[in-house]
Image (cartoon, rainbow, N blue to C red; front, side, top):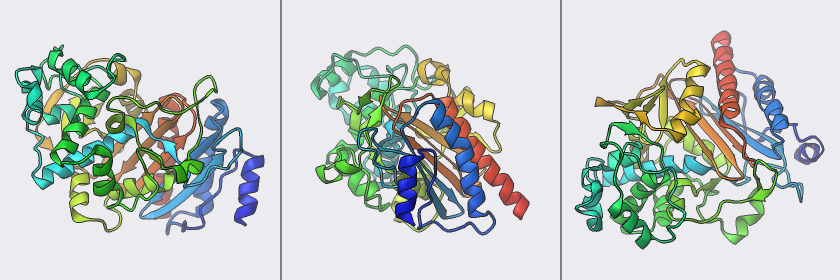
Length: 393
């Protein structure tokens, strides 16, 4: 049966297949779930000429996998729940979780200043920038990307030493790769290991994410999808300073759903990792439409699509937005929509979950395409599943 499904995918790229490991939810029919997902995904895949997509949905601890198209236009290998995608900035949520783990270990505190952990930066603006500022994009105006001329960590430290903030720390949210990248660098240093090893040992292995990597091993390259840019040219992410910490993870829909389930406290996992994950859901700043957690962005649920689109807009990604501290910090909530987008030159990703509903979604694609359609698709899918669950009950 599976061979027939795979063959069908090669012929009809919009046909979805469900993992044989999936089970029907008690109150939602499996065929109905497939219809909802395909109705949202198929038109989007066609509109943006996306070669392949992997969609994973979790409903009350039950997992469903839907795979569309091919991992490479050259060899036509079908997408599966084990296909590796570049998840881009969703990697930042892993960095935040690692830092949260380090705080539980007593290796750092989010209240620490950056220069407390990097003595070279003492006497610089980073005396007044906390690790919490790094984890919430509120350091004071760090750039979106590491400047192109910076090729190594020595040059990076020299850049940070001379950096002058545009705003006082904690007053504006400016989305930044160097910000979370610096947090990852400090976290690994506090753990006395490399960032790659820290992520592998403290998160991937504890969550049984056996198909997730920063550097894809040779034996797994066959599962690594080919990415395509907006011109349909084949591309993959290039190495760069702080890339591992900010946007370097490659993962599958099956592994990413494990991560989402763990964030929703579905299933039993290592107690320390569970607490670290929960801690990343605390709200520290209000900025525009969002409540800024530790990298994660949240909205009170139920939420309107327009609100989600505003929170995931270019205005929030590329402009400075006033940030109001939440004092005391907002404790982790159940009735919220928590999400994060990610992308590289040839891949696009989106994850979202609603803890109170125990519902989550992963959307991965090997093509760079706009954020609004993926947010809209996820919203349509989860909303309809929620409505159907209420109707069945």
